[in-house]
Image (cartoon, rainbow, N blue to C red):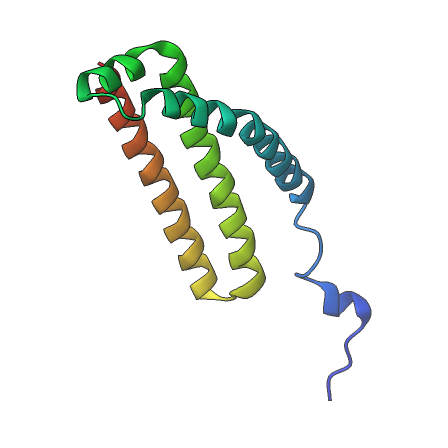
Length: 123
């Protein structure tokens, strides 16, 4: 029979010392998305229904390009943090680590492809 003290039960289950940083990152990205999403909808609506050349000219301007880039990057990083939190809550062991790696790989791939596509669109 094993006798475990409260301290021995808590070892490895204590504070990871990153909860405050995670909370602030979520808070900042949420506030940024509250500003960026309406701006993105407005800039996208201005280009919607135009011809190919009109859309290229619209996104070649700095404001729509920057708003779209920021919305893409901030939105994907926010999504990654949310999925990371869900994975930590519901998965454990090697599957958790593999899922986190896959999520981060997917997120950064989408960001890279999106930034590349927008730069190609603007040039």
